[in-house]
Amino acid sequence: MRPSTSRHARGSTLLMVIILVTVLMGLIASILVYAGKERVRAVAAGRNGQRQSCAESGLQLARSYYGRNFHNWNTYVAAPSTYDPVRSSYNANPADPNNPALQTAHPELFADLDGDGKQDVFLYIRDNDDELFPLPAERNRDNDHNVVVGAVCISSTLTPRSENTVSPTLLAHEGLLSYNGESAGCLTSNAGNGTGNCN
Image (cartoon, rainbow, N blue to C red; front, side):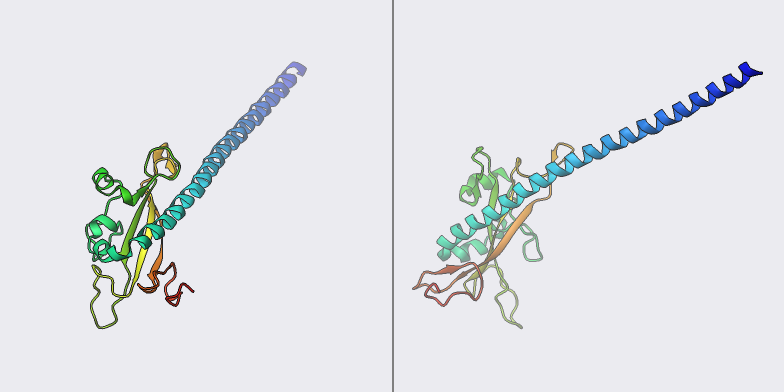
């Protein structure tokens, strides 16, 4: 009777060991999966900061570029397929910043921020809502010396990745650029700021 009892005890112990090893293996696998996902999140967070910086730097370049070229604002807003990448009811054919033909025809609208020889941002402009009711919107002409300028981060190195492919979602930052009087030559980045004498 003793040998049979000891075999049952050994069998029970072996079963408990197998269950314990299985639980430990599952726990280790779960920790490895969690650590891998955390690494991916950390990389995405780091790239998201770069991406935000890319678009914000581009916005400053857009303000500078379009501010210097105030006299061409009506030309720019009249050609949304070149200067405005935002699809809307009045812009059915928006500019495509990833189009090589646009990059070749208008290199002044693109900037390389990190010096790698590749374009990182596209600088754009569009008219603001400057018609008073009941007048219809006239998006191809600036009436109030205010325009919306912005930048789209198109970088292949500063954008987030999903499974080693670049995310198709583009990030843009924009703001209102105001011209406060031709004689003073003053520009501000907020509508309503300024008195025409740069104050």
